[in-house]
Image (cartoon, rainbow, N blue to C red):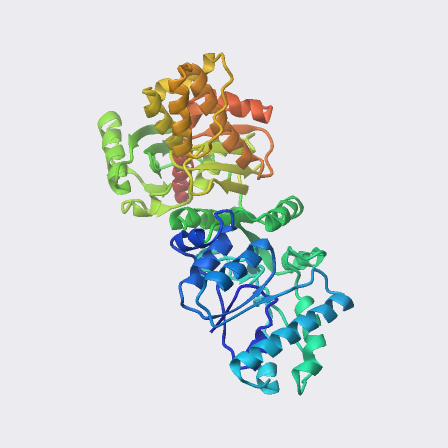
Length: 552
């Protein structure tokens, strides 16, 4: 079995010489072996590649020198790995005649070395059969999964959750090599084969990448899921350009080739799918009263920290609301919230026409009639509260998100933080404990600061160490809290910058109650934030409004 990672790998040649090729493109549990053998600054894809190569499952490798990290992987395996055959192919960065001639020589070098290693002759029949003839585009409408290579595990989740069939058009998925003539020897085929390999859809390491526009200009593309690899810049540049140019629904996913949070990824994909459902519909939130008397509808926002419930009538008026700690089980948190509503408002869950759940725990609440993602629900709730809002900044207990809306309240774009608690309510909660402050009091502490302290570490663990050092230096709590507020605001503003944001800006979530964080975000935006009276309930309100739609 020959392991490879790049679409420019001459798979057809290797199979014509009796080899069996397998794309190495899986996630890994950790990077322990890779970081022991190599440098920690290798990109995460190459660390995952090293983990698989050093595990001993494969003994033959053909790599392409896409970047310095892949070259380093080759060096490490050659020096430390247990292998039978390894080869590094020198790939030109252009597709002209000189490049094709140079690449032909590289292919001939590989041909001679692998033929000698296998002890086999070139099979013209196998060479011809190895070329795939089906299109890289599926029939009918589809989602373009493009950008950097994506692990097979992540791709499977995307394909299962996309609104339409997902076409893998990433750098390793859009392989499209074809020879129309038959050749009796590899020497006679080598130049045309080199041209065919180089004339594929260019990857981002090529000099001219203009041809990549064809990936998203296909008439059947309904939306774009753009994947980037953490700590690799090539495709981040393309994403930024594409984000400014396309009017298609677009979702960015960044992974690091380790086991990712399936819940967070599912939330993004479900919200992306909901964009298609709502794209051609009006999301006007106000409802008309029923002739049959007052009916009630409820929304449950089950978050990692708190569970927020709101009950509305047919006119969208609030009839009851409750905020409780979620605890270890989402279902129990939701039931406690309804017990509180029954106790304070004498409204029972049994008397509610329809209940919609949202948030991370939405699929665990068995008594809800349906569920929707918090992205869509926050957009609906924000539009109902203030139809002028075009950008929603939501900072919850364990995630942050920025949602862009059109004039009808439809979600046009959104981003979420990655699997890191920095810049969220959990971050502030951890810092409050370190400072021995009540979390509610902490919101006022950073307002009267004197020394402009900067907390440089975005990681919660490192930031806590930094805060402890500042306490030891007798820095005031107000100054430290101000530094923390700036840190959260900086993380949030970096998310805002990744969207097509525009005023009016609304801030929701529990952190919106922290006046210091809100002030720093306003300073960065150069705009005033609209903060609703109950910012925690925006997502639950959107869910309740969707529940009220059922009466129609």
